[in-house]
Length: 345
Image (cartoon, rainbow, N blue to C red; front, top):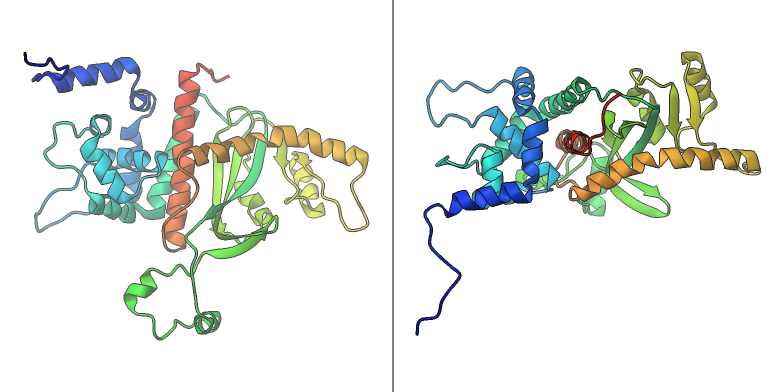
C-alpha cells in the first residue's frame, strides 16, 4: 500500500503562502502601511540624481526599490552578498521591494553601486526624510532633549612599526600596493573607555524624551571627545527647554551658554580630585540618570538591528553607515509608534 504524504503539488501554492503570511502578520506590511517610500526616493533623487547613460545598456532599478533594499539591509545587518541572497530566497522581501514578478533581482554589485552613488548626501536625505514623515504624523520633539554618544566599532587595523612611523609623518608606506591601500582604514581611531581600548568611530545623537526618536546626529572618529559634538546636535526645535546629558558634557562655559539661551540644565555633575560630589549632587545625578537612560534604549534598539559594528573602510563610508543606522532606527520607531497606538499630542 502506498504511503500517504502531506506534500501536495498545487499551482497556487505561492498565493496561498502569501495569504498565510498576511494572516500571521508580515512585519514588512507595517513598513508599507506607515512609511512613504516614494517621498524618500524623491528626496534621494533630488540630492543624488540618477546618472543618465547615453550609450544604452540595462536601465537602473527604480530608486524607490533600492531605498527599500537599503533599509532592509540596515535593519537586518546584512552584507551586500546576503542581501542579494535574501532577495532571491525570501518571498516577503521580493514583495516588499516590488520584485515578485521581476525576472531580474538587484545583485550585490547593484546594491554597492547604489550606496556609492548616493553617498553621505543620500543617507542624510533619508534621515531628514524620516524626520519629515515623523513631523507630518505629529511626532514633534517634545519633553526635552537627551544628548549622548556611542562608539561604533570598525575592523581593527594591523600595522608594522615601520608602517606606523611612516603614517605618523603623513607618508604612505612604499611597500603597500594599491589593493592593500584600499583595505587599510586610516581614518578610524583608538580610544580607551572604562579601561578597555576601542577602535572605530563615534555617533553622537540628540533624542527627544517623549517619543525616543533621534532628532539630530553628528559622526566622527572614536577619539573625538563627546562634548565636542554638543553644540552640533543641540535641538532648538524641541518644545521643552530641558537638556539632559551625562558626566562627559559639563563645563562652566556650557552651563553659562545654556542659561543664556534659556535652556534648563540637566547635565550630570562630575567630581574632581579632592573635590568629590556632595550628597545633594549625587542625588541630582541619580535623578537625571533615570531620564537620561532613555537614550540607552535607542542604542539598544540599534544593537537589536544586528549591532553597531560597521565593515566599511574610511570616514566617508562610515558616515554613510552610521547615518543609515539612525535613519533605520527612526523608521522602525515610527512604525512602532503607529502600531502601538501612541498618538501625537
